[in-house]
Length: 381
Image (cartoon, rainbow, N blue to C red):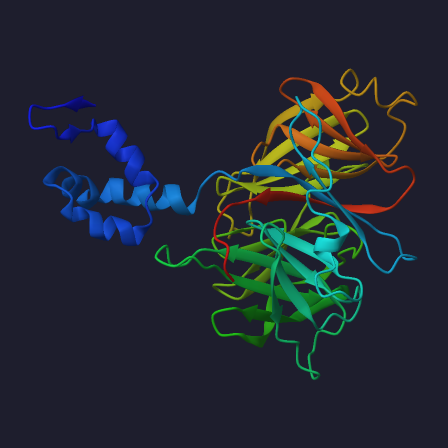
């Protein structure tokens, strides 16, 4: 930056771009009149896209996971939040019981999280009433209840996805999909879906190319682990991946390769538009990624790496790794960091640095983990 003879401040290119990155789209439209240089920068398609994507796809300013203690005695659930830092003390109770019990009555079950928003329900079974909730602002939206004539009375497969459709508006849209467990081989399945754009539930009957069974555990992280290009994905108790394509209205299963089978924890995750699967067998965590197109029914999984837990966990597991890894989850933004539940102890493990950190000890209590990104954007439903 320099001061000219006419006392006009001239900004270098990097400073101008940095300023533009922090401006909302409406301001960009007005500031084309500042000077010819700004007009040129804003008119550049690549820069305009960069400005918008920087504003509407920022890095979350808090990353960690939500832990909901599953206590059938208490009416109100215990909900804790932990930061994912492995170098500093954990940030506990940023989201507390009171914030989750936002209607002041009843038990609200956390079902899924997406882009900083939570999908919650009043009942564990026979769910008809859902709520979309932003813990950062404590804003919630009641989703219209499902019709009494709903075909899906005991939803097991539940998907939830929030996204920004219009960068000109500080608002998000979301989609919920659900279907029942298919305990027997079936050739058709009923899918119910809700769109915030129409504010209505819709039902579609899908004829399957190949008969399948689907068993999703309710007290595991059975909600969709991510959505790629309109395709929801789950992992079920039959060691298979379940895909539902909302664009082409197709549902299919992909069997687990024998070498991918996990005796302990396993999880799915989406990062950078790719689908990942992690499995834990005794002292090893193996990470795989889907090399093929998400819509391919002959998709190929490729091993990315295997990390050994023995040395990292020696201070936290004096009983050895004979104890089961009851659950496993990804760090929301780093595929090398995992959250493990071992005998009620929540442990963060960095596979690159081979460092483990004890985040919390719940004792022998049952709980459910959700990786969580706390965004500053967008705040409106």
